[in-house]
Length: 222
Image (cartoon, rainbow, N blue to C red; front, top):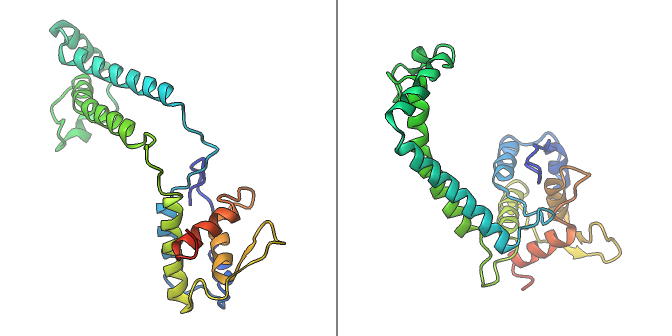
């Protein structure tokens, strides 16, 4: 699983298995199921706060302008400047450059010529990503679905729980208001805590966030 700093955590499969009240050893396929779910989980740690809309647009605008300007300059290089870049590229080409280029799209291109060609090809793609990111991640006017990635992940974990235990994930669940750290109780919630809190020093999402998302997912909370 990736935490909010994109560092890989060690998933404790035996602990997760035990939290479902199943005897060891862990069943074949369980670790692969959990790893797949962890790879697709995208935690929305609000400690990484979004920039104000005006500042965000300004940065994207500068990126778009810079990429566009560089693309225009490269597309209209005077022949003498292009030759100079290609000439010094010959002195800076990586070892075995021409051997490694055999059969590739840039076979026959000098190193400097190849780099200019790559930029001319990739910069429009980068420009598209910049524009798409600007639109895709802007704050919608309508209220977004809360914790969508979290609920999707809980849903996948519920399928795993049901598959390996044969039990209803929400069976015998209860709320213990005296336990502030883990108020939601049953084997499935213990399994969820073991998954999401793989790093004991970073218990995110909170137990209340996990509990509320789970109840919404199973139609027990609006």
